[in-house]
Image (cartoon, rainbow, N blue to C red; front, side, top):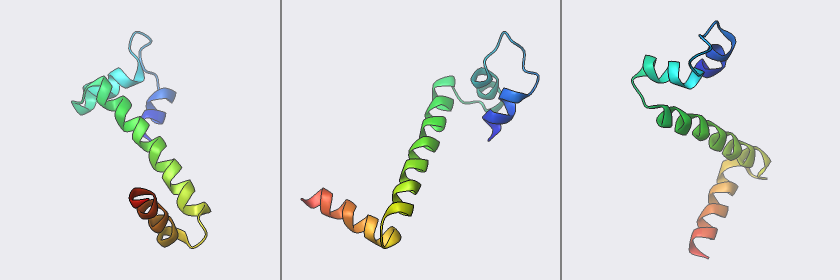
Length: 69
């Protein structure tokens, strides 16, 4: 969310949004990209939960079956 806000604010052109965010948070640029990637993975997981018949319980069973199978 903060990344979206930075992309739309008057951020200096000589710095990327991720660099500004890294400075503000004390994290590395690489860590910022990891956080962004994590949100994408969470979205995919949420889609699987939404699409699984039976909801989270069915998805949990599928994961456990895949691990043991």
